[in-house]
Amino acid sequence: MIELRHVQKQYQSGSHTTYALHDIDLSIEQGEIFGIIGHSGAGKSTLLRSINLLERPTAGSVVVDGVELTALSTKQLQEQRRRIGMIFQHFNLLSSATVEENVAFPLKLIKTPKAEVNQRVRELLELVGLTEQSRKYPAQLSGGQKQRVGIARALATNPHVLLCDEATSALDPQTTNSILSLLLDINRKLRITIVLITHEMHVIRSICDRVAVIHQGRIIEQGPVAEVFLKPRHEVTKQFIEQVADSIDFRDEKLSPDSTILKINFLGESTYEPILSRVVQETGVTFSILQGTISRMKSTPYGQLVVKIEGPRQAADDTVSLLIERGLDVEVYEHGLG
Ligand SMILES: Nc1ncnc2c1ncn2[C@@H]1O[C@H](COP(=O)(O)OP(=O)(O)OP(=O)(O)O)[C@@H](O)[C@H]1O
Image (cartoon, rainbow, N blue to C red; front, top):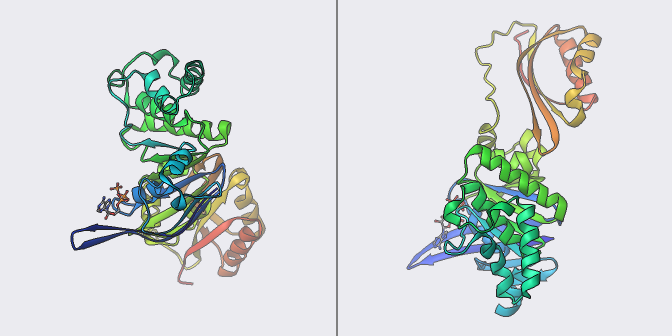
């Protein structure tokens, strides 16, 4: 488990102070994939690097697996950092070392016996699908393959936590997806906690369990991805969601006095159930679909449907009540003028 309490970070350059993090409180559970999303300059890197003290907070505490990192000596901190792997946007590989030498590097630093190093490197290259490339140099690899080397190297010392610093931002969409699948696979197989930072909502939606939105050095919203995604509260969060959602625009829709527009969110199994058609049969209204999407958040299906309900106001209100009663999340956008 990772706990950040009242973490602050200020950078001083001459007489100028930049307040990069303000009073950050965050708890990340063992085994979850936690995403931190924010615009450029929001404080994502500073926050991520506070977790292994690559950036030392100016105030507050950082506890990983019950150990208060800010209280450790340099040597003790080095030991603890072996339990926290990290991967980077630009991979940070040793260009003059082969794939297997790059992966072996952290093990050699702690003087692991040679046979053990060889065995571990073999396992890790198999895990990330690079067995065939073990004797190549980074310059001979694609971006996705380089990130796989980065991941194997980060896992060499069996960390409990993997920090991902914009790990897919330099990759094309297809390669991004393959790296995200690999991270998900590693999380499930090794039960390792993953903390990632990104400016792409797609990354959060694909693999994260929970998300925090950071803006101007503060966490402005956090929670399970589905909750934040379907009910964003802050304007910045809404902007990020627009990156992946079809924008819902029905301003030109002509509303008769007997029509109502509803936005219905389906989550989990309800996505595939004919709840709407059953309810309108009961209330006697008719409906037409203005817009609809079905997608997945990690492995949970979800759908968003914008429908125009036609019928007397009372019947429309009954329809909304029944939909809510059957577990759907409903927003009434507009009532006709009736
Ligand atoms: N070493 C530093 N010295 C001074 N200011 C810094 C330093 N590192 C970061 N900052 C400032 O702290 C703030 C947060 O920076 P940070 O790199 O954490 O943001 P970010 O969200 O990761 O941005 P990006 O997505 O562009 O990398 C910014 O205003 C940045 O200019």
